[in-house]
Length: 179
Image 1 (tube, one colour):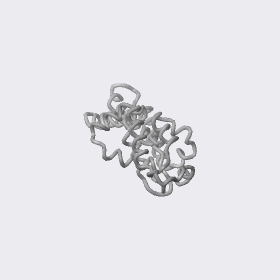
Image 2 (spheres, rainbow, N blue to C red):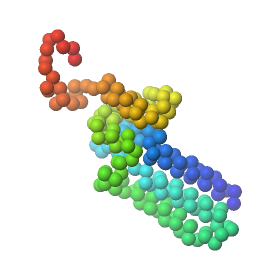
Image 3 (cartoon, rainbow, N blue to C red):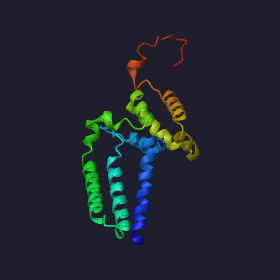
Image 4 (tube, rainbow, N blue to C red):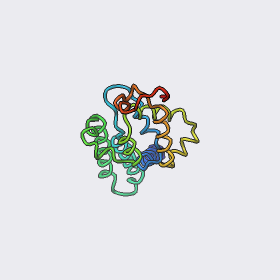
Protein backbone atom coordinates (compact mmCIF):
# COMPACT_ATOMS: atom_id res chain seq x y z
CA UNK A 1 0.00 0.00 0.00
CA UNK A 2 2.68 2.53 0.92
CA UNK A 3 4.71 1.41 -2.11
CA UNK A 4 2.21 3.16 -4.38
CA UNK A 5 2.75 6.56 -2.74
CA UNK A 6 6.14 6.89 -4.47
CA UNK A 7 4.76 6.66 -8.06
CA UNK A 8 1.90 8.94 -7.00
CA UNK A 9 4.27 11.65 -5.77
CA UNK A 10 6.63 11.29 -8.75
CA UNK A 11 3.74 11.52 -11.24
CA UNK A 12 2.37 14.60 -9.48
CA UNK A 13 5.82 16.22 -9.64
CA UNK A 14 6.22 15.50 -13.36
CA UNK A 15 2.68 16.64 -14.17
CA UNK A 16 3.37 19.86 -12.26
CA UNK A 17 6.56 20.32 -14.33
CA UNK A 18 4.67 19.79 -17.60
CA UNK A 19 2.05 22.27 -16.41
CA UNK A 20 4.72 24.89 -15.70
CA UNK A 21 6.16 24.35 -19.18
CA UNK A 22 2.77 24.70 -20.87
CA UNK A 23 1.91 27.83 -18.90
CA UNK A 24 5.27 29.36 -19.85
CA UNK A 25 6.94 29.48 -16.44
CA UNK A 26 9.65 26.97 -17.36
CA UNK A 27 11.50 27.75 -20.59
CA UNK A 28 14.52 25.43 -20.43
CA UNK A 29 12.95 22.21 -21.77
CA UNK A 30 11.47 24.00 -24.77
CA UNK A 31 14.74 25.82 -25.50
CA UNK A 32 16.53 22.46 -25.31
CA UNK A 33 14.59 21.34 -28.40
CA UNK A 34 16.27 24.12 -30.40
CA UNK A 35 19.79 22.75 -29.78
CA UNK A 36 19.61 19.89 -32.26
CA UNK A 37 21.67 20.05 -35.45
CA UNK A 38 20.44 18.20 -38.50
CA UNK A 39 17.66 18.14 -41.03
CA UNK A 40 14.46 18.28 -39.02
CA UNK A 41 13.89 20.69 -36.19
CA UNK A 42 12.05 19.04 -33.35
CA UNK A 43 8.84 20.50 -32.00
CA UNK A 44 8.19 20.44 -28.27
CA UNK A 45 5.56 17.73 -27.89
CA UNK A 46 4.37 17.15 -24.31
CA UNK A 47 1.48 14.79 -25.11
CA UNK A 48 3.37 11.48 -24.63
CA UNK A 49 4.78 12.47 -21.25
CA UNK A 50 1.47 14.01 -20.20
CA UNK A 51 -0.39 10.79 -20.98
CA UNK A 52 2.29 8.59 -19.39
CA UNK A 53 2.44 10.48 -16.08
CA UNK A 54 -1.34 10.93 -16.06
CA UNK A 55 -1.77 7.18 -16.50
CA UNK A 56 0.71 6.46 -13.70
CA UNK A 57 -1.15 8.95 -11.49
CA UNK A 58 -4.49 7.25 -12.21
CA UNK A 59 -3.03 3.77 -11.60
CA UNK A 60 -1.33 4.65 -8.33
CA UNK A 61 -4.27 6.70 -7.03
CA UNK A 62 -6.75 3.98 -7.96
CA UNK A 63 -4.59 1.37 -6.24
CA UNK A 64 -4.44 3.45 -3.07
CA UNK A 65 -8.10 4.50 -3.10
CA UNK A 66 -9.44 1.39 -4.81
CA UNK A 67 -8.92 -0.72 -1.73
CA UNK A 68 -11.71 1.21 0.03
CA UNK A 69 -13.87 1.94 -3.00
CA UNK A 70 -15.21 -0.24 -5.78
CA UNK A 71 -13.56 1.85 -8.54
CA UNK A 72 -10.36 -0.13 -8.93
CA UNK A 73 -11.10 -1.98 -12.19
CA UNK A 74 -12.53 0.93 -14.31
CA UNK A 75 -9.81 3.33 -13.21
CA UNK A 76 -7.15 0.67 -13.80
CA UNK A 77 -8.38 0.37 -17.40
CA UNK A 78 -8.32 4.16 -17.79
CA UNK A 79 -4.73 4.30 -16.47
CA UNK A 80 -3.51 1.53 -18.76
CA UNK A 81 -5.33 3.15 -21.68
CA UNK A 82 -3.62 6.49 -20.99
CA UNK A 83 -0.20 4.82 -20.86
CA UNK A 84 -0.95 3.00 -24.12
CA UNK A 85 -2.07 6.26 -25.77
CA UNK A 86 1.13 7.90 -24.51
CA UNK A 87 3.17 5.12 -26.12
CA UNK A 88 1.34 5.59 -29.43
CA UNK A 89 1.91 9.36 -29.28
CA UNK A 90 5.61 8.75 -28.56
CA UNK A 91 6.09 6.30 -31.44
CA UNK A 92 4.43 8.64 -33.96
CA UNK A 93 6.34 11.95 -33.81
CA UNK A 94 4.91 13.00 -37.18
CA UNK A 95 1.69 14.04 -35.43
CA UNK A 96 2.95 17.44 -34.20
CA UNK A 97 4.60 18.13 -37.56
CA UNK A 98 1.30 17.44 -39.33
CA UNK A 99 -0.66 19.88 -37.18
CA UNK A 100 1.72 22.72 -36.21
CA UNK A 101 -1.15 25.17 -35.67
CA UNK A 102 -2.31 23.02 -32.74
CA UNK A 103 0.98 21.97 -31.17
CA UNK A 104 2.93 25.25 -31.45
CA UNK A 105 0.38 27.55 -29.82
CA UNK A 106 1.51 27.02 -26.23
CA UNK A 107 3.04 28.93 -24.48
CA UNK A 108 2.74 32.35 -26.04
CA UNK A 109 6.46 33.21 -25.88
CA UNK A 110 7.24 29.96 -27.77
CA UNK A 111 4.82 30.81 -30.55
CA UNK A 112 6.14 34.37 -30.88
CA UNK A 113 9.76 33.23 -30.84
CA UNK A 114 9.17 30.67 -33.59
CA UNK A 115 7.40 33.28 -35.72
CA UNK A 116 10.12 35.94 -35.58
CA UNK A 117 13.35 33.92 -35.57
CA UNK A 118 15.12 31.58 -37.90
CA UNK A 119 16.35 28.13 -36.96
CA UNK A 120 19.93 29.36 -36.55
CA UNK A 121 18.86 32.15 -34.25
CA UNK A 122 16.82 29.77 -32.10
CA UNK A 123 19.81 27.44 -31.86
CA UNK A 124 21.99 30.32 -30.70
CA UNK A 125 19.36 31.27 -28.14
CA UNK A 126 19.30 27.71 -26.83
CA UNK A 127 23.06 27.57 -26.40
CA UNK A 128 23.20 31.06 -24.86
CA UNK A 129 20.53 29.92 -22.38
CA UNK A 130 22.99 27.31 -21.12
CA UNK A 131 25.49 30.07 -20.28
CA UNK A 132 23.05 31.97 -18.07
CA UNK A 133 23.43 31.66 -14.31
CA UNK A 134 20.58 29.78 -12.57
CA UNK A 135 19.17 32.86 -10.86
CA UNK A 136 18.95 34.77 -14.15
CA UNK A 137 17.21 31.78 -15.73
CA UNK A 138 14.62 31.94 -12.95
CA UNK A 139 14.06 35.64 -13.66
CA UNK A 140 13.61 34.98 -17.39
CA UNK A 141 11.36 31.99 -16.65
CA UNK A 142 9.03 34.22 -14.68
CA UNK A 143 8.93 37.20 -17.05
CA UNK A 144 8.14 36.83 -20.73
CA UNK A 145 8.94 40.49 -21.36
CA UNK A 146 12.42 40.17 -19.89
CA UNK A 147 12.97 36.92 -21.81
CA UNK A 148 11.91 38.52 -25.11
CA UNK A 149 14.26 41.45 -24.52
CA UNK A 150 17.12 39.05 -23.75
CA UNK A 151 16.30 37.01 -26.87
CA UNK A 152 16.31 40.14 -29.04
CA UNK A 153 19.67 41.19 -27.62
CA UNK A 154 21.15 37.73 -28.27
CA UNK A 155 19.82 37.77 -31.83
CA UNK A 156 21.27 41.22 -32.46
CA UNK A 157 24.61 40.31 -30.92
CA UNK A 158 25.00 37.14 -32.95
CA UNK A 159 23.74 38.35 -36.34
CA UNK A 160 26.15 37.43 -39.15
CA UNK A 161 26.28 38.00 -42.87
CA UNK A 162 26.66 34.29 -43.63
CA UNK A 163 23.35 33.40 -42.01
CA UNK A 164 21.16 35.69 -44.08
CA UNK A 165 22.98 37.32 -47.02
CA UNK A 166 19.77 38.54 -48.74
CA UNK A 167 19.06 40.73 -45.72
CA UNK A 168 22.30 42.65 -46.32
CA UNK A 169 21.71 43.32 -50.05
CA UNK A 170 19.98 46.67 -49.48
CA UNK A 171 22.71 48.04 -47.18
CA UNK A 172 24.67 50.79 -49.00
CA UNK A 173 28.39 50.19 -49.17
CA UNK A 174 30.37 53.17 -47.99
CA UNK A 175 34.05 53.30 -47.19
CA UNK A 176 33.35 55.16 -43.92
CA UNK A 177 30.76 52.65 -42.72
CA UNK A 178 31.94 49.95 -40.35
CA UNK A 179 30.13 46.62 -40.53
